Image (cartoon, rainbow, N blue to C red):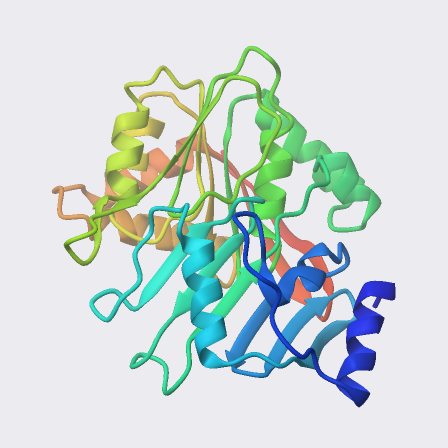
Length: 317
């Protein structure tokens, strides 16, 4: 923990914060010091008076003086500029905050008593495959194979569990594109932050009056093909949008995507299954042949303790 976090930890041992700071447009209220600490990756709250955070040393707990009402005021403030809605008819929300961090909130009675908040902090450092080699997420050989697949316009599937480094690796891959590429990305919540010049970032949109998205990932991928992409990125494939990916891949647009799976092999099988479940009369033979012909690499990420690494890199074709 750095000096900022240490000072808060000292408050936990002897004192608590007496009151939450006044909220402003670009304010995190009583979480301001934690958000300013660059060593912290994620912050979450389960109940009033208690804050958890994760850094390279693991999970830590702090005691801070704030009420359930103060927490809800902070949540409302953070959501104000996002256009996302949170109420009893829609008790979950994902939103991108003003600094690029990702907010997730659940409110009662989906949770037992108090609002639950998670903030995954936006990492400002520029990611590249070479930087991932330097921090030992990738080997030099793995990075070389990824660069060849990108140069050869092969699609890449990145699998793993939550917090295994999928989005980090995806961002690093996108940063390998040259200035002639036009990238269209589709996500539920903006998480990708790459340095591609010709880039349009799309996210799903929710209806303020109806539960559920009115512009889902499947629609975004379909629309992206009308935007002259040379590359397509999808933040996380988990439903019928896999069918639209088949269309994109079959039309020659390489795709870079993440998916929750236990291995590189299971990620491929999950893509096939999701495309077949989309209800578009897609045959298994067509799905397998298209994915097999288009996907250059299947990459699997794992996290052990605070260390993230690529444990599988399977070449196709």
